[in-house]
Image (cartoon, rainbow, N blue to C red; front, top):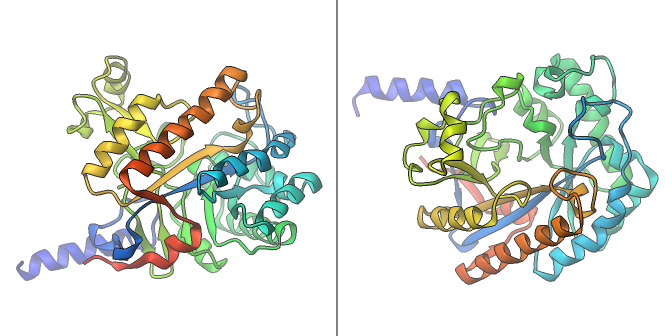
Length: 343
């Protein structure tokens, strides 16, 4: 490499350093300790119930579905999995739901982190709009105030000072990483690799990788795992053309597959996991919304049949991981295993 190449590479790395909304430089990729092996982690969005088909409402703050979460968590535990629940303000400030989360934490059944839904998280200084539902679009002082209000509430409600964060609606911004580091966070899980929310005024992750990376020296990113499926999966740029996405997906030629039981066909998920394993992926991040453990709160679990399919999805994925030697990982194990960037 001649000097000019080095300058360009350094400039590119500096441009993306500290920014979650921009794809990272390859040099920022985190190494994982050899004895970490191949692992998977589950991050559940522990949130209020609301009608997904209606505009967001600041008054939709019921958290009744959390009552079903301890039993669901024991099913995860029986499979050797300790999930991380990313709780938001309504969950942690409701006496009953906060007590349920605290009980699971104290029993060692789950870890706890943060999920920020700005429209139900004080201080309330912004209008409830689609643009403002992405926290990263708000004024930085308001982002900071909401983050600290939620972080303090989680510590008060669960007894744990959270160190892992997810932006509701994946709504990170240019200053998110800095604000998280200021508040003592060590890990972010807001990036939904391969997905693009820019048509809703949200972030564009279509070029973000699935591997973990250091956003800053003190903040690790573990994106939600996704892959492209279909005969054209080796040409992901086709999917980035908005007018082609629908036709390609309907023709089953090229589609995104995220590792979640919500809206993702099981057969495609299994195929995606196998492809990711073949590609050398060592850390898988799976997700779901905790209201899905009870019928009637999300579009994904509308009746008893949907709930049965929800658990069948998990059982099948757990069996596949077990056969392939992919073990569960807790939050603390991921942080401990992540070494300096691979340069």
